Image (cartoon, rainbow, N blue to C red; front, top):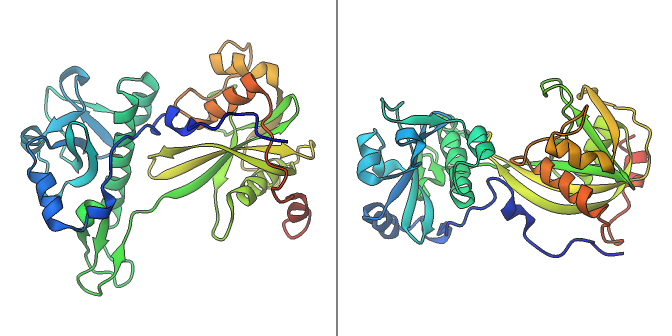
Length: 324
């Protein structure tokens, strides 16, 4: 049996996944190259006041020239180099809260409203994540001394002990367990009433994506799964996760949550999913298009159950053995 989906980059169609910058990561340690990027007259920056993105008057633009950025308080020599596109270098920098004439945007809402193009939204996610890391990692985890910025903002170095520290990305599996014409969804207590979504959880050390998918479904729903199929991923800058979207084949259907983390877990008929996504279902709803869960659900509702390669290791023995 083979995958029913064509080979395509589904991730690029999901919010925050359309970053087209050439990150030039192989040249970030070249001081002459970094200096040339900083002095390039085409240099621009994304600006953040804390967790909020800064925009011009009435939200007209979220990208600022160097003079505009410096006028708003950006330290240009310390701005993080994100990469290059057809218009030149792009940086990210923190600033104090700007005065009148500027607006501050919540990034989730910005993505939901579709106010910026997908390629810019991907760069915004990159900038927000890296600036968030700098804001919380100013001291060396090895010796406790202050660190300095290196590699054009993609590293912090400790002058005291010589240690180097790199930004982290936290992998999270988010998955849709499928039993033919039914899929497994859950809801957290903080969700809007009637909203259900895919199950999800952080990967643990020494764990494969497939094993994490099976473990999280088993812990949150008590449902056993076997074959796992990857669908897409999504950078999620809150603060710096990578959502790894998968489908999983259910081999049991009784729901008996082990960790009691979710308020409710239940099976939904495939026919219910599209109305839930469109918010036309009389009782239930699903996440908006900004979330990878929306895309997993839409793919299942429109195309049916994907089938993973038969060579994938059978996870039933793992679940019923050491993890039981």
